[in-house]
Length: 122
Image (cartoon, rainbow, N blue to C red; front, top):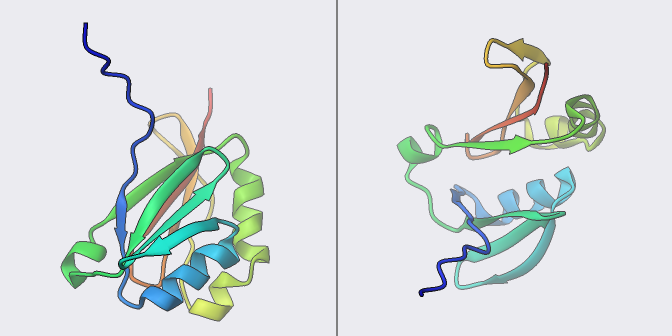
């Protein structure tokens, strides 16, 4: 029988300015574990993504990532306290309860990638 176990899945997140985006994610609290060949590997705990030194503008502005967290309020506060809003001129939305049983907010990175950060609610 074949071993079809998947150990990880990662998205390639586009960046218009690779150096700026790398610093943005580090300032937000992600760890850059490696970099080479125009790709940087970021993680936070057990989740990760690959930041690429490539960007098709229409792609970046229509690219969305989702992070499911245990405490969305703590993440909303982390975004504000990290200084990324002022330093990078990015925007963040207010916390909002969604009809799909999630409380979340959106954060845009310097390339226009939308990160939806939320937690499940009952």
